Image (cartoon, rainbow, N blue to C red; front, side):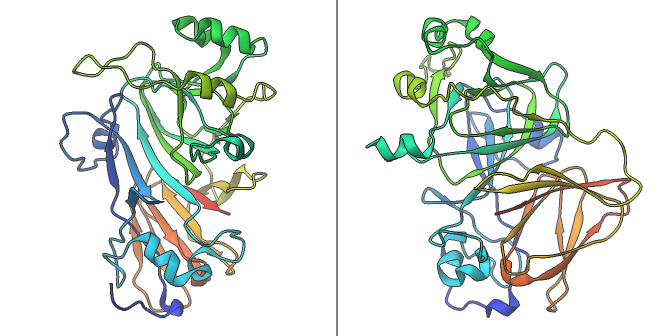
Length: 340
């Protein structure tokens, strides 16, 4: 793109999703969200909604910046996109995904900053958060070590289905969230459709893939030694954050994650217009869960942007005041808001 609008004319940005085939992929993006998912011999398991990764830089789909990629926008606009709270303005700090699990994902762990500093392979730390958009009957979340799990137990059971006994296991419920700090052993169970907010990292150590093979009889690579070393055996906290259980009669905001150096996440339950403001401190990410909504900038004349279930819109930090206008068709509009 040759010309960029002045930062004062920045507006809410939507992006084309990048669909990623996975051996464990499902069909809820198509059936639950109504997405036009591309045909693939391997099921589609992920949609990268917002990404500034070298292998997949998100491309804007709306407005004057349509066709520009997120990496170039961050380089050009810097803090006008990211905000004053971002420590590193060389790239967008978060990766937003939809995870569509037709089968159980591998038993895996992501490294922390200390591990990555000592590792020579270029590993990147990853802390993440999951929000359950949809869960089929019997779906489960496996995340965090049980109280009695030890490193010895993990090595002993690593090739056995009994390794599940070492994990905290939860029934999946729509609206629940899970905070997964780096070093947490975890697996997303079959039947889950999840919004994932994470540090911009693609480092995953698979400890077990449950004996799974692909259509050609090949198993995926495991990283047992690295993975076991990366597990934080000192953390036994429950990762589950129970969702709101009642319908609201007025706008409400529930903090999901507020004490985390990488992101803050809130669950907005809206029945009417909500006015918000970036105050130039941070970009805002707004993810639609159950119904569409419009985002309207209050400081410039940009067109309203409609966000549909499963989509995430990026509000640049320079936008300032804006409003969220829930669809009148929904009794309650659920929006996940993320900032840094």
